Image (cartoon, rainbow, N blue to C red; front, side, top):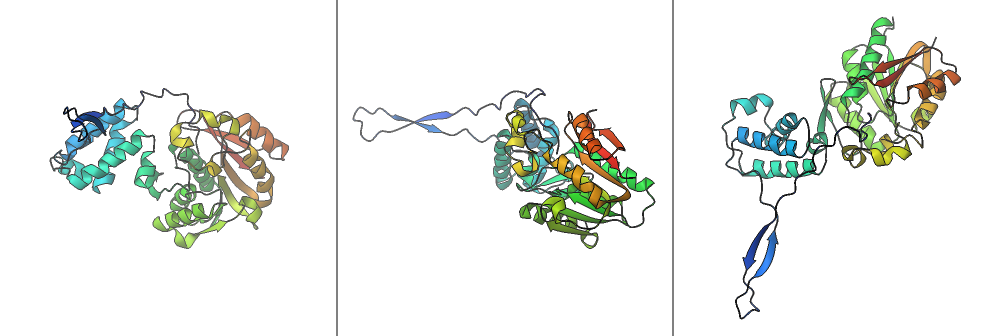
Length: 330
């Protein structure tokens, strides 16, 4: 999870389609006055547009609505609507869009202009070089969370552990666990989530990435459902405070599940649980890696210190903000 508060320029509001008016005859009128009826906005995309024209028109419309990067989103939506790959869009640039593709792309555009993220529209998302299934039951994996994967993999490269055991608490889509296991071919991973629907998505993604024989998914109340010890524990817990809900971007507030967003009034309830549980679940010499809100580093550090952990480090995301807490159990 990552902070998507309102703070960056929001861009222009989506331009509203202009309604068209037509006059229809009024059978009750002897004077021949027509009655005024209202049609919806005319479709932006037609079947006769070429793929290149449709992509360009879509990018321009998205940019006008403040959806950036508009060019990338346009390409992804055209690929999703047509079933073509990026290379196909170049080699078949002059191919007509076609009626079915035009209708599908028009639907995609309308949904995006109503703030639905591209990954939600298409049902999949890229993360750490993987293409993962995304449903309304799981958090949309985001680039800043890749910093957590980097930190865990750096630890595994330096730690002399054969066949390390990885625990992902609150696994959601399984994105973090998939990325770590894909890069650490001798590791075994267990993902835990309270949501049965999220567990089903994680299982599909692990299978999709060819990791079925090195992973398990357990539905349960986080560490309360766990026994045994692990070499690495990772978690992207809910860390947005309830008092911050009104400041969330609409792409997050309306489309990410609340269970994966909110960590109590101050956003730190789950980190308190993690600090309490990792001492029981982490092997001596093991490492734990948690995502945090960009203003939570001091608070989480204090929680961990009060729980007896002195070896704590902070990693920053691609924007230079505090994002990941690393804990070493000596």
